[in-house]
Image (cartoon, rainbow, N blue to C red; front, top):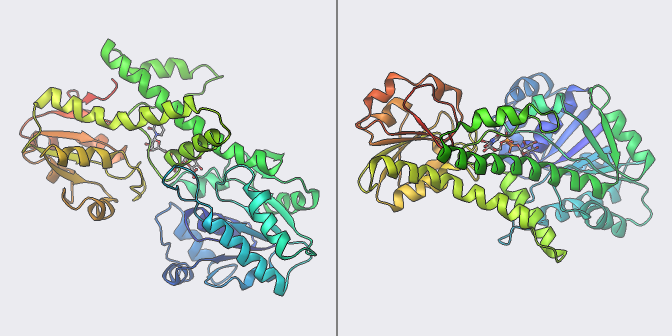
Length: 422
Ligand code: UGA
């Protein structure tokens, strides 16, 4: 099939690249020419495991990128995978979604396939696919016969290619049988249960999945904070809890809280949707509150060990919001470094991939090239990201002036590290 993807961010690019491995002809439409150039040179503009291999194998054959919408005219399916950044009140900003719908309509007015299916891939508030995207196209082209679908993504950053090819489920949100057929054919080749639902249900499935996963983490953190007081290891507790098949052991890892471009944004957006319906998001507000307080616990545990932070050199190990990515969006390291700076401490930061990004955001901290250099003469150490290389750290901690080490990710293997929740 001919597929156009609007948006060459991590969702659009991974979706397009993976669909090309299923032998579809894919065009990714991206407004930034440098990204288009990078994709067309088989150089991924983001780091994503396995992506470069796909680009190398497919670019120039059945995968290409463009700054223009022209390929929409010959597309069997047009995916919208543009950003929905948060407004100041936490609600999702739909500017790019609206713009994409208008541009698609403009292009379909020139020429189109027999029954193009417009597919929303971006995470959007319930009702957006029907009432914004498809309504915009219908209003502009009242005679056009086209399909309308919401097809959420469940990709984890850093593991997105694997997740796309091995999903737990594929959700196809359309009330239109012809559009559903197109979507089923598009995903033929991927083995996974397919759930056919209404577009609005598909939109809710996406938000609800992320909110529940975020809630599991905040729940584990609240229980973890109690376990710490009781002298119990929350990881033993959650192992026991997770063995109940109704619960599942996943996403119960207590620590410094969740970050990233999705969980904080999606939980806030869902809370905002609840408020707009004149309901109170009691539960979701609590999920966010636990997550805001959690990184600050790293600081108070450190203060308990070394007292006043003024003038102290503190190694911050891990800046990315999780391992295997250079993404620092909503990273729990941000409030920690800010708090250290505000207290007059000297944060010395290390991350295998994310130092440049953090240096741009927080230039007043010091950035070094290895964990060992961050630990030299340090009065304390905070481990913020679950990078596997931190599990191997051992003698490097001998470089510290004072061995006050707080592990925010249950990753260290040395005996004297203090866990945030264990
Ligand atoms: C998340 C979801 O896992 C994906 O299914 C979803 O598609 C994606 O958001 C999205 O909406 O696009 P992602 O943000 O890439 O994926 O990262 P996760 O691996 O889920 O981790 C999120 C955060 O939670 C990280 O900061 C991680 O350190 C933290 N986390 C995760 C915990 O603190 N404890 C856990 O048990 C698991």
